[in-house]
Length: 313
Image 1: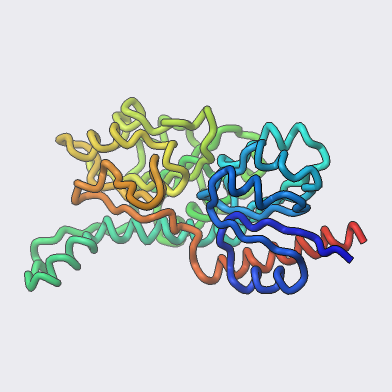
Image 2 (image 1 turned 180 degrees about the vertical axis):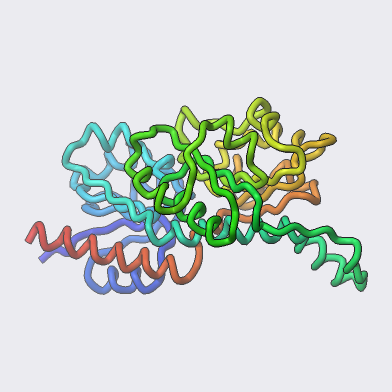
């Protein structure tokens, strides 16, 4: 009997890959270009992917048998959603939950690192400079945490902010978004986009990349922010205009610091234009990449594949 074929287009937890390989015909083509994906997806009924790889309509068209697409995470900006919507036989499953907590905790790692000057403190100490009385630090308690995008991840950030004793305000594109049910429970006050920007000491961004959010954080929106406030981007690189952010970080009475886990241009040999600045922390899109969350995502993938197989027995 021919075994069901699965294409895994992104690295997922090894335990999930091992289980899938034991049960099915699995092809791994991590972050491969379009032509390689088209070749390897042929005959596949299931496609599994994360960020970092483009799943185009031409890729999916190369597998007429494709029925299940599993996004091991949240965003679908790298998936041709128009193709998916046109093909009713395709089922898309997202697994946003496990990564949400990891990304939310990363937001606070950034806040603490910037507030306490940890990167600079570490560098000076390694150089033998005892800068104990030179480095300024600030508490999170009592500060205003603004969240742009109070969906799954943003709600987690707001909940943690309340536990830290912060005043949490947030905004979301549609007031009818189902996640709004959680906002009151999490202590997040709903405000306009402009008010969130103008009141925040810390601004944490958690929106998907869409035509409507492209360069959402631009010169005009950055000009609304408080002098010496902090900006954190754990959403998608295209949401923040990096040139405008550079200007806001270098002008008098501009932002105090920024931390970005996502970038307009990502991958090997891509250097952010913000890399020259000392008041910026840059990381390589690792927000959801904890061992714990990736293992949990792997287990969710296995569960959904089992359900799919049971359905077609």
